[in-house]
Every structure is written in C-alpha cells, then in structure tokens.
Length: 84
Image 1 (cartoon, rainbow, N blue to C red):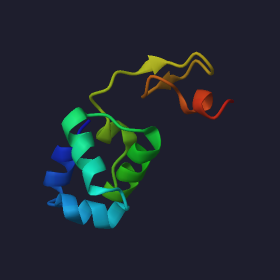
Image 2: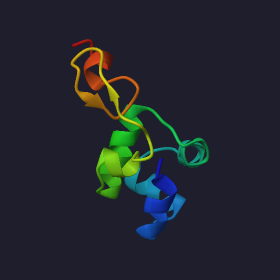
Image 3: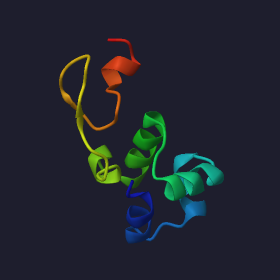
C-alpha cells in the first residue's frame, strides 16, 4: 500500500489525515506499518487523498474474481463481499 508515500507527497501529516478522513490515528499508523486495510477504509482514504484505489493499493496483485471473473484489486472482489 502506498499510503505513506502519497500522504508525504501531498504534504499531509497523520494528524491532518485523521482530521480529513475521520479514520482513527492508530488505524492510519497500522495501515502504514502493515500495508493493508479493509476495502471500506481504502476507499475512504483514496477519496480523501483524491487518488484511485489502484494508486493507493498499487503494490497489490490483481486476481480474477471467482464471482464475476473481472480483475479484482483485492483478494475478494466487491461483488463477493456484497453477495452479488
């Protein structure tokens, strides 16, 4: 996940990102350390930082979705998560 590099490129501190996104400080720290998060959190961060999910999570491999056969950025496509 490219959260730290995007945040620094945009000159946004962790406290400012907390304020902008509503995501807890510790959660942002954990994401930057582990490199992963919930899809809903990634969507919120991408919207807050005005980047695509692919830009934010670009180091993840795409996998064909078992439900819809589209390339999925995450191990499970949204269609499977939503039960479609």
